[in-house]
Length: 264
Ligand SMILES: NC(=O)C1=CN([C@@H]2O[C@H](COP(=O)(O)OP(=O)(O)OC[C@H]3O[C@@H](n4cnc5c(N)ncnc54)[C@H](OP(=O)(O)O)[C@@H]3O)[C@@H](O)[C@H]2O)C=CC1
Ligand SMILES: O=C(O)C1=N[C@H](C(=O)O)C[C@H](O)C1
Image 1: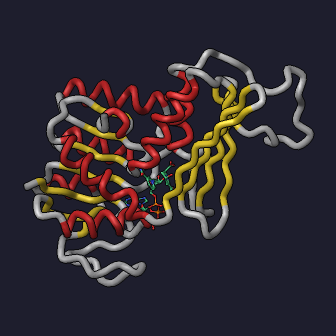
Image 2 (image 1 turned 90 degrees about the vertical axis):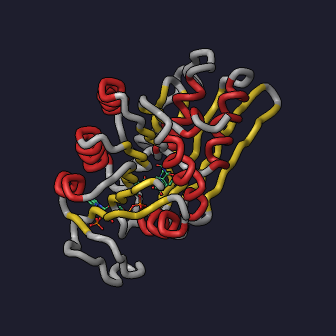
């Protein structure tokens, strides 16, 4: 049995995670951490079913009072990092879907995980299709070094570019011959027209109501192009990955960044 605490239970992802954990036979939801509703039970708020577990405002107090193996964090990067540090101090293994961590954050958190010999997973995307998209993009980039990433999300998203787009660019840059793309003398008539620059690759972020999470990776070559695309149409698409991460983190004693490291 894996004892689980979820931070951000009223959010789009948090709600699905609560449902998934409550359904899984080997998982036990012990508590949730929420900044708005405290008390013993969380009633029917923000369209979620009433919860039969304690609701804490403070992660520190939660871990003092509740037995927990795994923290699932689905909040925001500043909060997610704080929660991870508290979890490490209590010997709890974090599974973090929250995006927007810097390279420095990940490095710092990895060091702590290593010192404490505690497993942790930060996964910018839990959907298997998105992980495959990243892996296929890395394969393609060996042969086609001109690449632009277009990510599309709902207009409630706080961070840009998405964590998935950043991770995709990082994975591509591990194999891609360095190249600054486009015309050497190109200039933007409107600032931002060419998107963000990641080692010469371009990343474009689209935000529109009605979208969930979508990404295209476009490769160009002489007289040809290759387009890879993944769509998440709802948040249940992420849940098998969250489940896998909770099971896997129990066997780890270091921090793993990306489910691509877990799925062979
Ligand atoms: N890895 C993956 O596969 C995926 C990752 N994500 C990422 O997960 C994160 C959450 O996304 P999403 O669910 O759409 O966002 P939401 O805004 O819907 O949910 C975030 C939740 O976190 C809560 N929160 C914020 N601060 C705190 C705090 N201090 N303590 C407790 N709860 C807090 C918010 O509360 P309040 O309502 O009061 O603001 C809100 O309920 C984002 O970083 C997103 O990029 C999203 C989808 C998939
Ligand atoms: O905020 C979201 O919705 C999503 N965030 C993650 C990201 O930033 O990549 C994962 C997925 O794209 C949905």
